Image 1 (cartoon, rainbow, N blue to C red):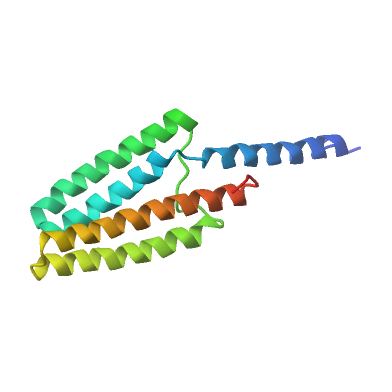
Image 2 (image 1 turned 90 degrees about the horizontal axis):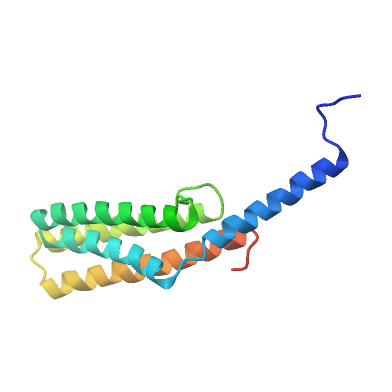
Length: 152
């Protein structure tokens, strides 16, 4: 008799616990609206500061790094984990698509900086970054919950 092989009951219990764990992970992706908006704000600050000047970009980058640290800390405190957006699974194509969009926004911000666009135009670009990042955060959360077997 092989004692390394689990019994049918043990195997069923292990599979059931996987489902429970996935449901718990799905619940982690249920973020309050402020959390989605905070992600949007981080990206808006990044794009807006890049579009203004080199000095603004340095200050903006420091602010972004601090805010990202605070968001990670908040997630760890609230949920006990931080789920990385670059994880394998259904959310990865969404994340990579957004990275591509961010590259376009960074290029647009640099173009605006170098060609003397008005501050209002630069703020408009930052507003686009905010709206897209906030919407992505909501979509990412729904996709993650659906993948983990939770309600989307």
